[in-house]
Image (tube, rainbow over all chains, first blue to last red; front, side):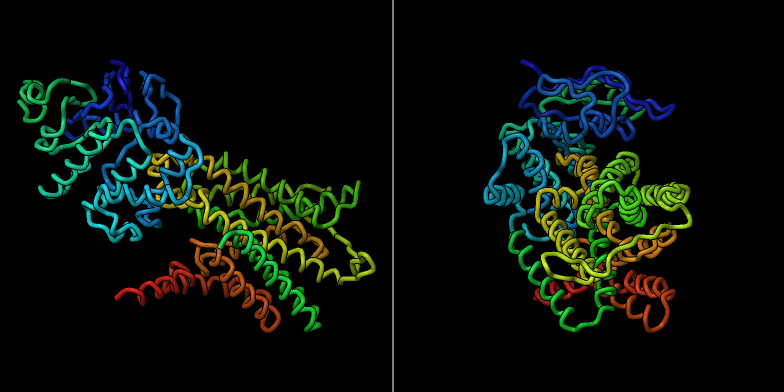
Length: 243
Length: 320
């Protein structure tokens, strides 16, 4: 099977600090991949390089069979790559429905041609109802709780109708039941055909969600395999718990 | 309301204002009205970039002056005598191109850095104009115009003609601003103002949209400046690049409200009228003091401007 995402030996430095060192990664269509690593291991930098927020200095990113290097972040979103942010970044001056409307107008619209305003509105409500926020469609983001903010972030990413969704620490700071909510939502999205990369520190969530686990430490990939095998890998144990 | 009915209402209101002022038979009202309308156009133009996209432009005076000096250039060139409406179009095109260029050079900057870059551009342009003898240099240029404009047996005093042109420009600027606000472009601008990174991640081509904003904003400011030499009769760099234009085009939307088209209109009508009143009753040098004081008051009591204040009040009343 052709990989949906192929990251080919990408490297990224910030001055003298090597954030990513020849990282290779393949993600198959429909897969649920967990990406873990201690703080500062390069997870967010990898996501930023994949999504075009940062430009990698070496290596290449291929998505859906096409090279992505040199493309701006919005062009990668148009190709089917979406992300949610570690800290929610809603459009604070727009209502929830309008937050969802933006990727539909700028991404789906570009891919499928002009959309009828009524269809866009109906789809906004449908997506908000998927994350349980349809009753707040006309509220402003400032009215939301932390978990609702995370859900809005995911709904906005999904509104771009992506092939691959990168969820960057979507559960950080949430209670156990809220984590369950988000996990359920991510699994539903995956069942609808969206490939998902989950970046998370909460191991129980990663273990229950991921079909495959990749571990980054100091900018290098040190493990890649089934979750139950990876967590027993001595190198991974050493990276997390020390010698 | 769709754009066409809105434009129709604006045109009707504008015509009522024009014929209402004619009925009063006081020439000064057209002179003062021209200044207020000029600020409506400038404030609305500034708001397209500053209010909708969140990029504060301190170089409004440069675009205004560039529009004015484009008219002076064609007046001095004297190849084909261009009517003022044509000069407005040419001024708009020139300033739109300069706005696009400024966008390419500065839009990778944000916040204070962008603001300083626009201010620097104004200083560079003023220096160029001061040293350009063809348009009068530092000594300025005289522009002569007839007392009355004659067409088809109808005679219109020139100040009324300029007022009418500025009225049309104000209708155009407000219609553009309102149409943007309710369009895909408006949503894109709002996302740039709120969070550029999230906007890109949602598929918004932020750089392209910002270039559209700088071009449109620059073009409208240039159009506001193009008839100015004909209004003032004698144009010198100090008056065209005056602090008055830079400060007012920021203060008026801030006082009225920056997130919609009504804010700059309200701010310009209010502040422009107060300044014109103060100019004739107290002193012309008190204008910037009034702007400064009002700006301080509004930043403290109504940071979202008058329109934001009213909207918040209405929202609070609606909540049980």
